Picture: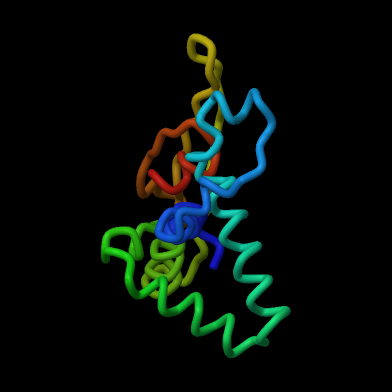
Length: 135
């Protein structure tokens, strides 16, 4: 349960963005729709279920909501899937070579993924994690 996009989708399912207590600046800047904040909110709800009702209740609470997501959302952890395939086929864990650069007023990252000496793919994103996921 480490994919921010999936956790954000689960939070959106529950409408958690409306309940976030935010400062004026981040609220005006669309903070209620930030994936990282939504993901954190869902993790907090799941933690509360765990503390109140235990592991089994939290597990089923998560699983019921996860299964209700559309399939493409559930399968978007490409980095994890690549790791599985690379270990099966090459016996190696993929290695990412990432670089960041400033483009206009924002940061852009490029990442190349290798399994052995050969590059398997290249990706771009607003964060290192996004670029690696895209690669």
